Structure formats: C-alpha cells, structure tokens
Length: 320
Ligand SMILES: [Zn+2]
Image: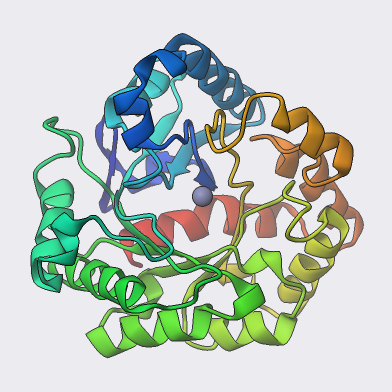
C-alpha cells in the first residue's frame, strides 16, 4: 500500500480510515498574526481546534485533510499539536491561498522557482520541520483566473508532476472558475485523477459539476453549513443527484470548517448564525445531519458512505 504523509509522519494509506476531505484546524492571516501577536489567543485557538477535532473523532473520523496554505496561516507545528492531543491524523498541504495577490517575492520570480518552494515542502519538510506536505493547494475566486492565479496554478501543476502529489483547487462555481482551472492543469500535463476541485457543492447546477467530472477530477461537496453559498437542502439535492447519476466515486463531502478564523471579529459568528449565513457549521454536521438525510433519500448506504469518506480521499491522496 502506498504511504501518505501526515503531520506525524508517513502512514500506510490503508490507515487513513474515515476522512474529512476539507477542513481547517485554524485559519488566520499570518502577516497580521506575526505583526500583532497580542491580538491572538493561541490557547483559545488550540482549545477550539481540539474540541472540533475530538467531536469529529467521536463520529468515527480518523483523518482530516487540512487545506490551510500560505495566507491562511498554515502552521504545521500547531497542526501536529492538535494531531498529538486528539489522536486524529492531520494531512497538511503546500501552496498559496490567494484570489490574485502575490507577494513581491513571488511576483518577481518565475513559475518554476515558485514550484521549487512547493516541492521542498513535499520532499524535505515545511517551516523548518521534517513534517512534509501531502498535497498542493491553489485558488480561484470571484476575480476569476487572473494572471497571478494562473501562475500559481501552473506552479502547483509543475510541483505535482515533479513529486506525484495531488492538487486541491479552491474554486468559485458562481463565476465558473472550475473549467479553466482544470484546463490549466491539463495544459501542464497533470494527471487529472490527482486533481480535486473544491467547493463545487456551492452550486446546484448539476450540469456544471458533471462538466468537471467528465474530465476525471474529484469534486468537493465540501462546504456544508455555509448557507451563504448554498443552503444544506439544496446541497443535499445536488449530492443526491450526483450519486444517482453514478458519480459517487469522484465525490468528497466535507464542511470547510474553520475551528477558529480571524477574518471576522469574534462576535460575527453569532450574527452569521442568526442571519442564516451559516447553519450548524462544524466538523460533525455531515455525520449528524447530511448523511442521515442522504440515507433517507435512498442514495447513501454503507457502501456509498465508505466510497465517499474512505476510498475517495485515499485514492485522491495516493493517486490511484
Ligand atoms: Zn478551505
């Protein structure tokens, strides 16, 4: 069996068990956190991560794919503390989470140099540790596939080809970024079975999602609870239809939950919940509500559950 790198070292891919394919144990802007550390409470963040991950563990989760890259405060030492204290395996990434902006450092260096940075994270270690990244992350959002976004995608693609590591690409269905993202990977010669287009579940346009699936990529139905993009009921209808149409082997289901996030002041979470922008957003929503509903709808049984929560994340990670 192939190995998968976790923040605690390499494991046999068979040991992954039930996987949440897209979550975050902490999201924060590393520049702000570095410049104004007194504005952050590391203990509070750690406690929030431990509660979220332990709750997921109680539902049977044994591995979490943590999609936190540069600009979201990736910190593999923090991830390892969470993994050590919970016993849940955490899988870290390399790459850049940006909708356009690049630091001058990367603006003035070419694609291959950027790719080399990602390769180092995968082959040597991240942030001066021997913890290795297992996958590559890039993003396209409302601004679309700008020149900088394309540069990041090409760098990620080249690092994938060099190392064999899979890719997760944040996408925005509302502006249909997915097809162009896949096209760039294709142009670079990436094996599309190694590509996961995240956030496809933000649309109920099944034809759009099927267009991506036709290319052989995995699609992430991975933002359950983020009602501002699509309510749970509509997400369930879309998921059910994709399963009915025979796509179970290319779907991941997750929540994109951030155990803590500094994008908003602390009081915002309550406001979002009361306004209906988020609903029951957590690392357990898919087990407490989504899977039972999909079972009631007659599209999920134990075999489909295992395909989506065990086999697909494992096959995506090892490139089967
Ligand atoms: Zn995410």
